[in-house]
Length: 241
Image (cartoon, rainbow, N blue to C red; front, top):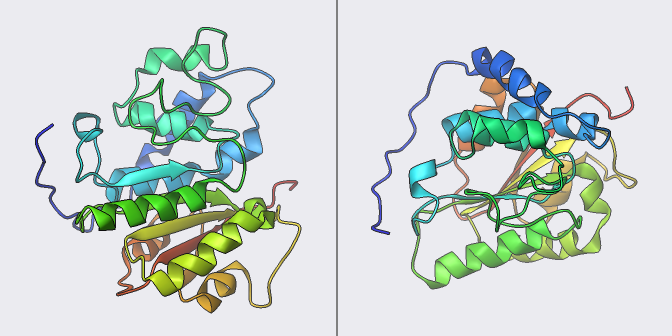
């Protein structure tokens, strides 16, 4: 595919008006395995990212210059599927078959079945290391514009593989790597000063915001961080509340 020239995103009006439509799309997916708290925790953060920040579209999913989004928090992907449908990556008609034997919408996303899905996920702790490898690969190819975004859950930070990735990415100066941590108080372990402090100690630029505040999310996503990877911790209601 021919490379596409991407326009930089300018500040836009708040995108919360789209939430009723996203909730309608999510309601089309039924079943006992919806992992509802896991799904709804990511909804606002995903929508702001896809609506206002990511440089990728249904027409550019194979373009070398696209941004990459890696959903490491692969369980409870309904919000992800709803956003993909709202943005035209997948057909809305697929949503009602969620989790069915012949449906491409599995309980964990499959990159071989859905356009725009970069990785098959579900094994917690794999996404951020894959993001580090993707950022290194893009750098090696001389592709300096594409960004790599990885969405992880706070409980994934119980996995040692993530800490190795965090420790490597900071000193490596992977400034095209972004980590979005959905913090719903599920983690077993903690750090003095909160999750953001763990990233900062490894040389990342990091910020904690309200995971339901669209303007705060957008500002955190787009804040300058020269020479350093960026982590945004999105705090949402506790999983068991």
